[in-house]
Length: 437
Image 1 (cartoon, rainbow, N blue to C red):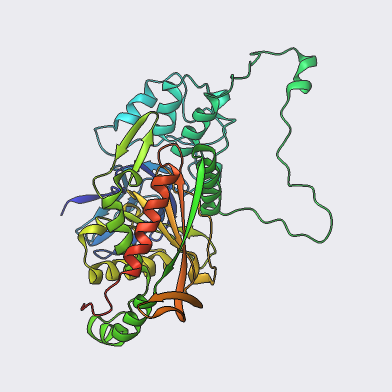
Image 2 (image 1 turned 120 degrees about the horizontal axis):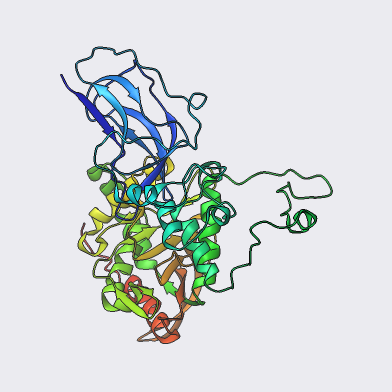
């Protein structure tokens, strides 16, 4: 039986490389179909790579920590089951900054560009992926300058987003002049200070951010630097929704085998409003507005680690309430179990975050770039409310909820941003108490 290559899988439209976090198998181990062979990480999410065949691992082509392009072979599997004596390439036998020879005869375009470049991925103190090296070549960035770019990837490696942020900041300020060979007496003066732990006083504990927290921090700062944020608030009477859910939730769980929460109902209303306000469902590229025809709503999800991830419900407007509910439950559960696929966190056109799940009444959410809007729904609380009736005004106990809509003022003005969130509130208030599902 032939030897089969285990390839780095396609991880989404915008992802072309991934970092190997850990090998679950070693040379000589047998694997079953769909059994996880290694764990990988991208700029979006961590995931596992399963084997598509049953057999024996005969060779491991990359070490933990290596950045591998999509489509590259990472291991060889003998489907005949015969063990072939092959040395395991470990981190002690092969340094992480080694440029590995690909198994496939056809090199990726990014790799070809790196090989033709006048700088090498192994010249610096850390490994650089073919994509990063290609970007460095196109922008005329020397290895000396590349070494100074802070990386948020594993072991401080530079990712695509790191390069994009660096190039963006570089375009807004003049590049510092560099003296190729400074005199000996000048070396100490221009020498950069060594990185040290922050100096603090008192009873403190210094904790380094994990990889995901670094990415979140970077993404949030980038968003605030990119978009002028405006937040508009509306209070909605969601009594009909609360009463309807209380009426059908038992039957729904018995029939569908899962719970129905308020989030799918909010998603449905947001999807309808986005169809009516297409400029809220867009992105901005320079002076060009990119209207998105698909309505893909991201769902901010808190993880047990305290970090945050945003799985995306694709074509949300084409799903009924049962379909949205199943998608919401499935993505939320797998997000908390770290089982999301990278493609399930990409392609979002708008984001919904439920701050009410933590008991918060409202918030001012930060836009998930490159989107132009994000909606936060607060906790549902009983309040005395003045209501108009045919017999005059009365005070009644109603279930009320705040909606907070943050939007990019470069493209969404206050009038549009305000009308959009008011439309969502109107859809929620007009929910049919007799609706069947």
